[in-house]
Picture 1 (cartoon, rainbow, N blue to C red):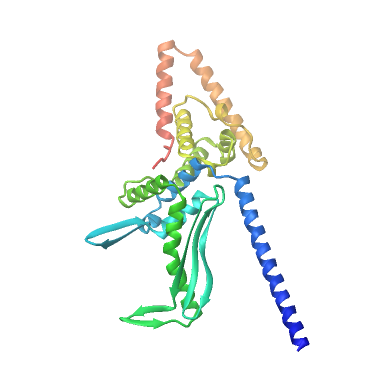
Picture 2 (cartoon, rainbow, N blue to C red):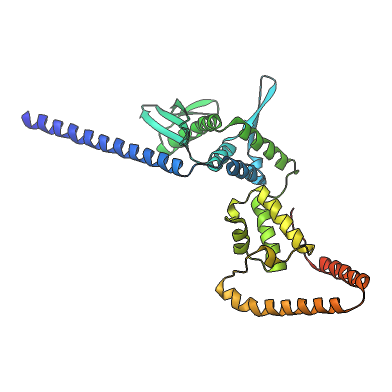
Length: 310
């Protein structure tokens, strides 16, 4: 009896130590998440831009709004897919579904969303019976996979409610409005695609690389906002209209492998432009010179490709 009692006490101590170790590990993970969120806080302006830009994707917009009839009216709202996109782009959120306990014939689960920056938390605890209605009959579930899918399906609606309870309501409303515009075909191309087209236009027309553009703005193109895109268009138009040259705006620094190939071409171009300037300066009077410059500007505009902003 003494041996059994000693073994029982030892098992109790071992189980307690494991539970304590697991709880300590979870606590450290939570502390790490909070620390990273405080070290890299969200930029609300950039987060909103990312959300609205994502809502311009037709594939997302098609499944972004749910709708069903109730009491003679139609109920609509953001779907779980849109809520997930909101949470992912808002940043520094922890959200999901956890199964707390699985009992005989039912599971107890928790849906949650936690803003790691502001410590605002929404959670909902619910019970899911291990049964499903099929062909008018109640069918009990025994397969662990079926039980998991049932809990996850019931939890998704609670997760959506938790996410929408944490993210500001005006951001959610703007996202829904943007999705409706996309579905109506009245929305423009996503910002990242327009920026990519702009960089391509700079490269093809003026040999300006992405690295030069990023150096001009001071940060990566992935962080560009609508304001930065408008400035990029203005710079392109300045070059197209002859108001400035690439060398006046962008750094001449280029990768070593490209610099050796493009430098001779640049020298030839500068020599050609210098000769053209001399010819214009020594021929005719002022009126003839202005006329030649106008003709030359018209020809250059017709040859240059336009900045695709669609």
